[in-house]
Length: 629
Image (cartoon, rainbow, N blue to C red):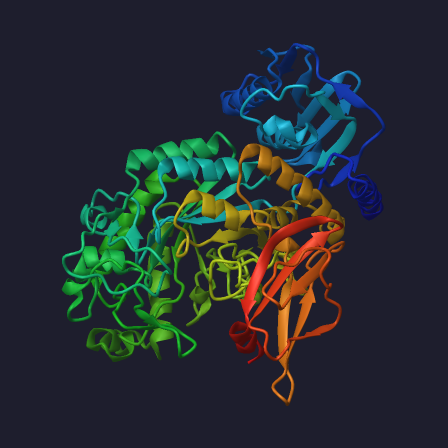
């Protein structure tokens, strides 16, 4: 019966969005119907709901948005009839985060078992309102109406996360708050806070002040990360920053007020150059006292298919000082973050120094460890005892499965595809799915001719295809998933938004909505309406979904052929080889397009009817030839 209801709701949603009618809700609700009619906001708007301190921010935001955009007086009442009524109920169907939202001739009613449900109901209400609700000033001449609606909505997963890497490039406390604000609009509830790496240590640890005095700063470089020149000894190491413990408390509170829990990540034993540069005694490699915090210059060799360090960026598993250090660090971290989990990283740990280090070889002999993978497993087991001793559960990237013996109760975050998550679940571990094939939103989202270059592409279609529960896995062990925003190539918040949206819309739908409610064409029609909302809100986003997917082949004669495809339907791709700028009057791509032997440049552009969509692509003949190879 539930599947029948969901399919009926999906058909309804398809009908109203495909005809360009609102509402266009993301993530798509569990059950929804939209009767004919609209409720018109009165000249004086009132809101009533539970008088609970945790709703203070939700109320203030709702009041503020309505006041600013409509220009009308908005009042808050503790009870009684109101334009917008929020009510706590007892409805087992809704769980702890679900809600019911009804709009009819009498106004708006949102019901939920818990305050979190009321909060998510408010986020949906924003999407039912005209896009001008995002305006920073009064939207004049507007008819403020809300379509009639009957929505019952509950999340598919409890863990709906976004990861924010502030270690490679530091982002201010205000940027982190903005990140949280952006998250919650689409019902994300976990901020995975990547706080330490080779390029910076971002959290104050009072037991080890040098972590932030030295470890939080490097040499400013501009260009493409990992290709930078090695810093000169006289270049100032003033680029970076860190969060004081008071800053962290403020951010934790800010998240809690918006029903977001923060999971801190202290990435060890690899990715630890900032810690080693600050306290060389954490290494057992000679010369570590000369190490500096990495500024983006290459120092890992990936040509072997696994990381080999040119400088040893690991904490030494054979050094007892390391476990004393981790005990104190994790103790301070645990006291600052009230949520259940601490993430210990564990990924991409180079072992070439370990393989020949006398202290580690002695550890292997003493503990009966066969190889360096088992050395890391030994390190992980010791760290799990430290973290659990602080009253927290340990979480790590899927490499922590290597070497065996992962302690029960440890959760695994699967990033190298879903394989690690499948393996972990079969061993009885809880899993958070974060496959780089789908949810790495720092990767290119379109053609390299237009995108800031990264090592691979994850298109919007890839993100929308994300299903956290693969076949053969016990769904009860899959906590959910998240979008991962690594910041190697991220230099400012505007670019962060460009990389995040619209892919994070797709991921939010995979984490909140029933899988059977998802439909690609329907989703795209809703995305376009949300892009219009982003325009009003001055939020940056990528137009990559409009731009051609380019595939180049070469025949035995060396002749080049280009195949141009659309990611979304309803577009035509036009091109030129004569250095002019194509528009909708130029040839449109159909099948393989032969590249004239003397052509030096191909220009490509997409149109919907007479309107140009996305950006014009310019690809040289040399680049086309490279792609063919």
